[in-house]
Length: 236
Image (cartoon, rainbow, N blue to C red; front, side):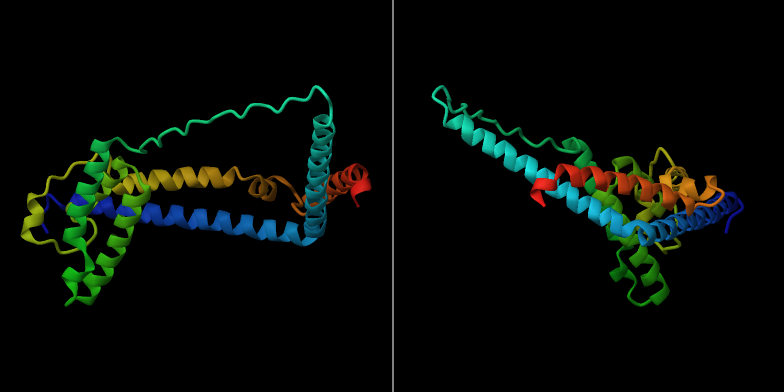
């Protein structure tokens, strides 16, 4: 390995370590949130179900009353059937302009031809790496932006995936606004911020005794059920 490439490799390794730490933090937050939600469902689940059932019944009663009023109105002398409004379907707009779609397809095809697992059938380790890289490549092509695909394309052809590329790969034009790993780090940081702002996670860290929130929920749903029962009395 040349001295010129060493700092790049070190930087990539540091980024990968940071990403791993961020991923672990995100997994922890999600795990704690799910556990707390499950605990709340255990304590308040029956009330939630009853409330939802009554709400559906309430909507059905309202719909039936509306239909009944319309029937009564139709029997009136001055009733006129409303004219049907013709809705002209709009053409679906392409998510990406044609040129960007073509560029995404080109980058995807170029990368796929160089890292497809079938190229490495004699090397089990390389096949496993190529399979994972291919999986990510497909996912980014289908759901990611052009910028993300450009970054991952560059990530592959700069040798950051530890796949042994052939000589023709050196002729591939590599460009990217952001390093793929930097993008991945940014996305994880945003995901962590979002996860920390989850209502239930905030309760776990803001309440001295988070389970007291279950009592608040009980009060809310008991009041809601009481009101819905009054509104649906005739329909019960």
